[in-house]
Length: 215
Image 1 (tube, helix red, strand yellow):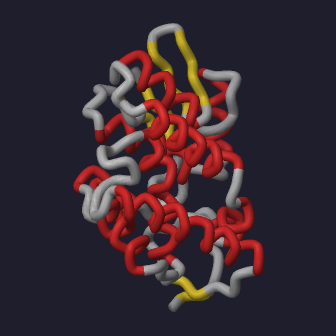
Image 2: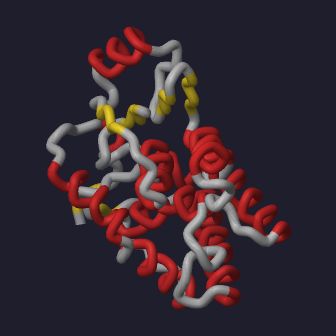
């Protein structure tokens, strides 16, 4: 099984699929491509009809899009352990994952993930509203599961929100006390630390993701 990903410093969607699979010790080989280069598109075109990452190849099956990959891995390899076992919690976790997948556009556009950097940025009102919603989500779940993952045990929803926490660190944005405790929980995870370590060792620059000014 192969997982095609982009730069670890920048590629948020790659991180989401990689994090879930690595956290649950799913065996896969990693194929990393440098974003925003001719080789990136040429390499994908040689193998796949999809021109974006992440892409998962499992035998004859090709799955793209982070959430679709996570759902497939959950069904095929995790026996459902990728979601909370309680049906109502599972429904909420899926709702929050879908909200991340399709929402927070201002935050994502104005605060690209850039693990190597520490930046200052002027945010729009829309981005500030997105951050407030993130704070609300983390805070609410910490009330139910203090100092734990969003639904107690690690699940797909935690993988979906991990790149947001790395963005908050880059742009020096603090949340409320309880929400920050969840951020600390995520940042202390050895699996995520492994991704961050490798991101810090990268040297490629993707100019469109170099937002803000150095702090």
